[in-house]
Picture 1 (cartoon, helix red, strand yellow):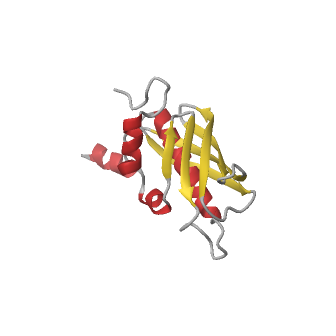
Picture 2 (spheres, rainbow, N blue to C red):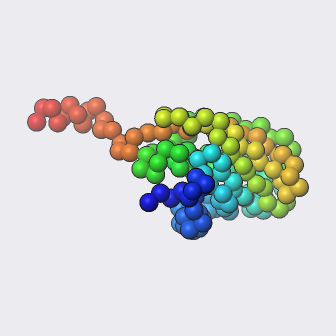
Picture 3 (tube, rainbow, N blue to C red):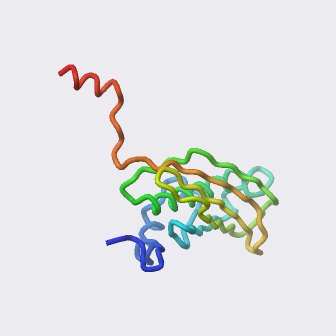
Length: 158
């Protein structure tokens, strides 16, 4: 049975499971919550509080963590949960500071291929003002990790 429903979105049950136990340690520390999940569109929120730099503004790196989390999960849903996903490129432009409340990231697929998936991530504040635009590209790897060449050589010798 697929984790996605007829709209190609993560079902309510699987979305709850993702937020409860499927996020990484950093996502949990940052307070990231996934609101909507599909290969084409990911939506997540993150509190400003606890994720600020010394001047009380949302840290730019926090935006990048939110963007990478959304793009990586979307890539994983696209590729299949048996595949491995690694981010290979991310960039972010910070347009204005977020000082309080919650920011929302919306990752929209740019390209969903066999080996690469790319997303544009728009992050807005509670008033809907764009604070950051990011782009992430993920590499889709095989389900099993290939053996290192030196391991293959020792098998041949035996």
